[in-house]
Image 1 (cartoon, rainbow, N blue to C red):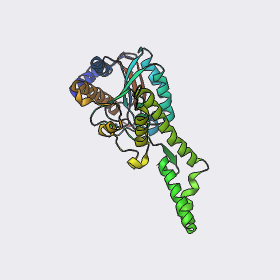
Image 2: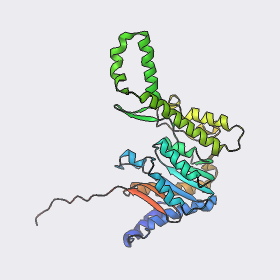
Image 3: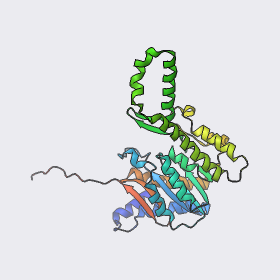
Image 4: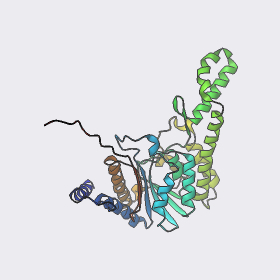
Length: 317
């Protein structure tokens, strides 16, 4: 695989692509998308973010799932006819509201949507994945909790933890009012609406995933309500994980009734996905690109850092 990429790079160095032309590396990556499509018989689009590329100096918010991703999905799906679509996702998460907007966009066009997770789809990206008819994962791939996170004066905090801390303060102060001076520095920054906002955000995340799993994954399933409730209760509880970065893997999903396929049961399929993911990982690690949307037809939208060349000091000869 690495040798294939090195050969493509060597061709690009020898004959650099002109503006508007595909590079050999681009052709190679798109051939790997086509290889997956040949196995599944379904169109596949990439939705990747450089969230696991080492040393990538990109602000975290630029890597996240956000409303601008609708443009990328429109670019790579407008020539793909309904009704089937597979989406390879590699993303750290972002806005639940943006995930809702993407689901509306995709489901307004495709009746059968599957999500392929080769490595990493967390938080709001997990929510997006739960809108699929089925989830296809490599054995080491991971999803994550969907409990909302809030930016506070002290950094990022789980909404559930904020509520829990307030409830703890209430209980302690009811029992001993002399503790008020100790609690005041903690309670003062909470603001007039933070607690209500936290409760609403928790409810939103769970209600979206419950609705999507009932409507799509468990369509025509007599136990749809029960399974959807179980998934939301598990993924949406900070108490279950203690940390928002914890992994949710195939063995965690199966008891919940999630329709998840372990790709290792289909070795050719797994290898094709691994090779495609390798191409994406190398792209992120060796270029300014930090987000990509792409299909095998050559329709692509990339977001990349602006490279600024800083001249070195002048030397006198």
